[in-house]
Image 1 (cartoon, rainbow, N blue to C red):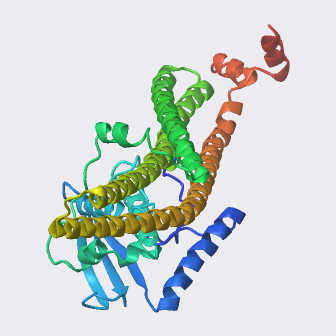
Image 2 (image 1 turned 180 degrees about the vertical axis):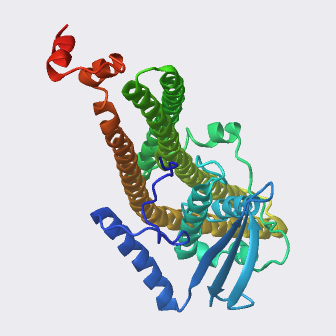
Length: 426
């Protein structure tokens, strides 16, 4: 019998390209990406990144990729060979998230998958990272980020110039509860992301348990197969002996297929839900960061009011010094300017986040469709392979009939048809 292999959905699948689907939601996503691309093309700007190789021979996986662009401030238009570790991608993700509060930067893909250091593991990691860089490069804000330019151009290890500020629990407690947010859509989106994060985590844990139970079933089937083969070797009746041995071998092959099936479902669905649990957390953090900007704006408004009141007190004073008046007026002008800048920033962040949320939801729907579609196809293939093994066993089982058992039990006796019938009826 053939050695079991995990079924391949498409042998010509390109690991560095995103999958194409024909569902309505996927079509809308493609249209959104097309709109983003047209936005860049109107300005004559583009950035294309293609991951070519994944080096797993180091402690931290290293991605080799190439990039072409005509964006301003880039030294060259083509970068044929760039090497960056997964840790450097993490630094890029952190600095992009911190420097661009108006964008929902997708969570960085995992450095490994449930395929466990196989060819499928490398394929999945390359595809996930390619999808991530595509979405970053297609974003009309992120593609112009200076840290992204440095990530592509630097000849040495990428170390961002901007160090993201770590958000502590005390920071959240200080700013989040007392901030009034009049944008009900973003409030609802933050609440929904929090709920979905919990659901994604629970489903991911359940799928991991299911995969573990399937591996346990595979182990029991293999053990049963081994014992059936051992029993067949000592069985005296050839049809039963052959049937037991074939039955044991079939169980062992099905056991191997069940192991692959368990790994596949953990990778296709388990990893997807684990990733989107993190992605949901990223959405919450992005929306919470907007509240921090609103808090800074509220503080700026209070500062401006305080400066105005101080000038009013100076006006009512009997002893007015010109230097104090000039200093107070300068402070008021600075406070008003700072308040206006923050007000414009809040409006820009709020407006852009509405667009970002729509794109995020479309991407999530497309990724969910992709994961479920791949999961269902592979499960069907696995079940068909197991059914085929059982079908191949059918002739050997049919050979174990009551008639054959009795005939072999009679040994070398030469019996006519009537005698055989009489013995079979006894």
